[in-house]
Image 1 (cartoon, rainbow, N blue to C red):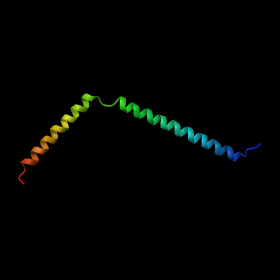
Image 2: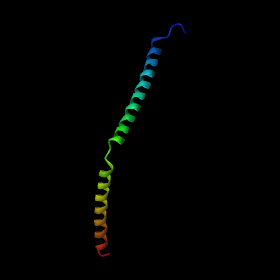
Image 3: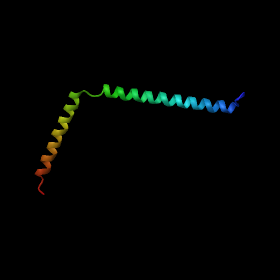
Image 4: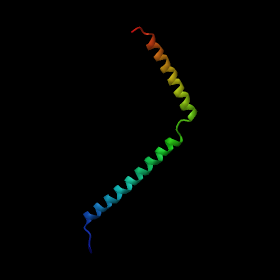
Length: 69
């Protein structure tokens, strides 16, 4: 173990770099998800959008019931 060949150093460096890159990628993905959750649409906006969708669905249902079968 007195001397480590050069190709082993390359393998060790690749393992360390790959592990570090994976950890950084995981942390950045987590931060991005947290930012999306905290800065997402407000509750009022979601409720307004949901009410608009319900109105459109009611209109479609009325139209479908008026069509003679």
